Image (cartoon, rainbow, N blue to C red; front, side):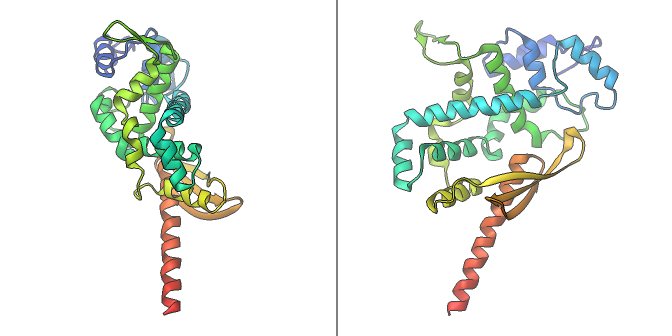
Length: 273
């Protein structure tokens, strides 16, 4: 989005983005907040402060809304899993809990591969507020979650009126998620390409509970952080992964643990020969 000389965000850009996502904000400051990357005016604290005042923003970037959006998305997915008979049958066939399957579905839906088409559909990279030289591709999935948080705060879980005149038992937030996330076909996408899902399923099948991911180290400026995450079984460190987001670092740790298991299995097979 463009920033006007008075540091307000260009109104026509806001209107264009709202038309794309199919939601009109009552308080546009939430939308601006969701799209605000930490690199904007990062070298000029006074200008950033003036920008926040000009647009009525509470926070320095999108991250608090991302945290909220992550929780709201999880709730919408959990509700979908609760009502979907196919998911119930899948859970029974795999000896999993509904919570476990809902977690797997969420992992699939918010993976980079799933969110790339969402970001493309809503032309997100065009509207993120950041410095031009900064590569924001690695943060688009986080900003999408921030957008969900912004829609939830502004629109809540109120019902909406359908085009046929009836009142749907949908929240405006759910409507956005169902429109842009392939939630109804997510079960079909749970596959071997999801290392965190595989690890979780293995733990459940062996009565080990849930895998634990802990941030070991954070490096770099706020707009370009690198995370190092450990995968644990109780207090035992199983593998370490790195990435430009906590989610990517967790996936890398899960990938490495699966590789360790495959290598161990190959060695045992060779010993037996």
